[in-house]
Image 1 (cartoon, protein in one colour):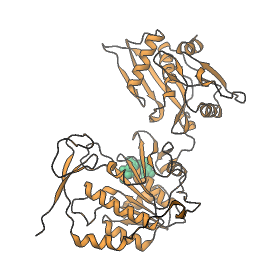
Image 2: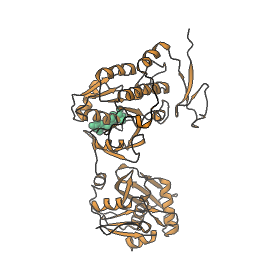
Image 3: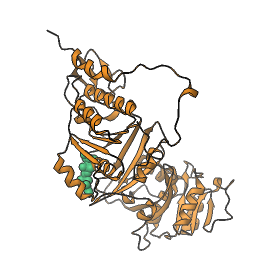
Image 4: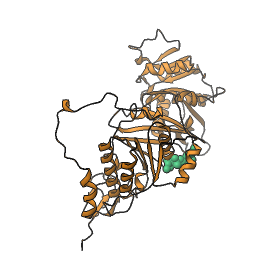
Length: 455
Ligand code: TYD
Ligand code: MG
């Protein structure tokens, strides 16, 4: 009788060990090892690998044939943008995200959008009826979209060979299981093995495969982390569940840059593309209020006009509160310290609340200038004109530092009707301002900005 062979795997990074370990020697995480069966019966292994394997021979680069138009459009321009210009045949794309963020909706919309190609949507999570309901909700019909509710990889591979789809979507990789390994669905060996089988299918048939992967905080089942090494592209779908905006960003892309962003809005009839995010983010500004300023930011490579809101009030009880939504709290504390020390504002005994409107998160250091202006506007209770915007990084000595892609920011501000933009004096060099209709104010120190704004 064959003895079952087991090994221990780290849930975080997929490291394999013969013994249980308290701390993973590969990624350093504690308590992440679980035991999994790894013995495979020879019979099943041969039937799946024997038919598909072909012997590869080395070729020189010039011998390899290339075709000009490699990519094709997904029908969703925001997705094309993140993928680097469209779908690459034979690519395996992993879409990760928290539960309920809209991964299945995006995947189904993709399958339904490609009207002229056969698409195969494989779901291991929902029944056909549920998928039909969702399709009715997003109000899209496509007779070339085939729905398969299946979790066995072997069966899926057979169906794919029969249906010869042009694109395959799998929702989700964690629900799949293959006969080749004996551990339960969702375990690391199952995920790795299933992905490898699908990867081989994609490479051999040149059909792109989209995989949906769950993220889980506890790490009790393997998250998409270990998959990231296997697949070609990793897309992260993120956003605040209480807000409408969803951001799709590439964290790994073998066929394009990872600095592009795709922006969607979750509506009652599915995801809608947002091609001009600034207009949406600034749409509901009726009157000027104190504590509000606009930052000309860049996320990825796209300019965004972001509304920064601050509220400063006297701390009612003891220790003042500092709270920040959508911006790093430590960076806010640093900016407040700069204001206190370099510009002489007494904020130490005040509560400061900061919010980036629209539920988005900003990492762009150019937001600094807008943040300190909002804080002071609220503190002084003087409003900042809604036609003014800011782009500058603030250094520890209160100097306004230059930011990247300043022309792009100025152009976006101009396009949206702003009449004045504050940028760093050090951005002046090489900047052609002759054509600009917008007034560009160059500043070197935070005091100069306050002098101009609040007199
Ligand atoms: P879903 O795609 O099921 O998320 P995931 O697969 O990432 O878990 O989307 C779930 C949320 O999206 C759900 O809370 C409801 C919302 N939703 C809409 O607001 N409008 C719609 O048209 C659809 C289909 C979903
Ligand atoms: Mg889902």
